[in-house]
Image (cartoon, rainbow, N blue to C red; front, side, top):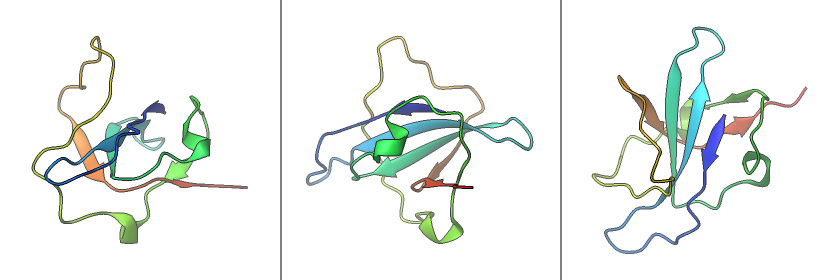
Length: 93
């Protein structure tokens, strides 16, 4: 999982989001997870190789029209992108 935190506060029409680039362990698809207007959790601040999931009840249906993310200038969004607006839940053994 790659993590791109956005520590800026959401205000007015601007929606900031943390971006997580995740790989589906079942089919190896890449999924971009946008977590809007939230402080990044401590567990997601490092490059982790642990399992995370997206809980159905956390998926947002009311997605913003524009989202601001903080990524390096060299970052390129993967082609044929699949994405979801949600937060991640860490799976603990």
